[in-house]
Length: 149
Image (cartoon, rainbow, N blue to C red; front, side, top):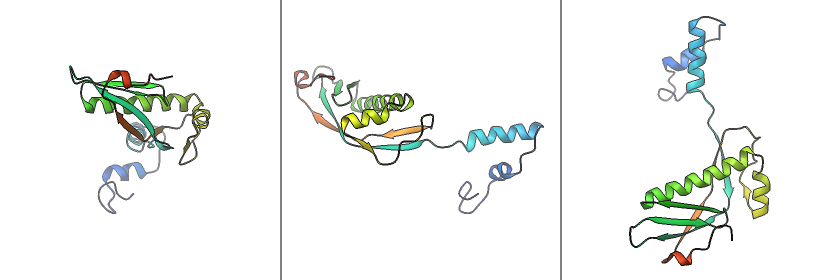
């Protein structure tokens, strides 16, 4: 197995996992547990080919950030800019995970004129989403377009 220890090296863990499986016994159970922990399949990356726009305003009184994304019908808030962007990414991830798990992702993308860079894997596949977004700064709350309108 390449790359686990160093270039071309095979570590003790990798060697142990490569050994043939023997049913029964404590060593077999430990080997299967290690396989589950260390050789877990990585989630499939699904790139959405679009750029959604977030309208963002900073409260001049306390410095908190608020934003809406009408295209996704989402909103986000944070005490700092970093917290706000984390909230945006989490909201997007939760929405797309929900659409994917329910089998509604393709229809949602079609309704919005969007597509993916690769075929959508079958429901049940571990997936993560990359949805590019842009920020449009507003100066007043009244300038934000209400999500869902």
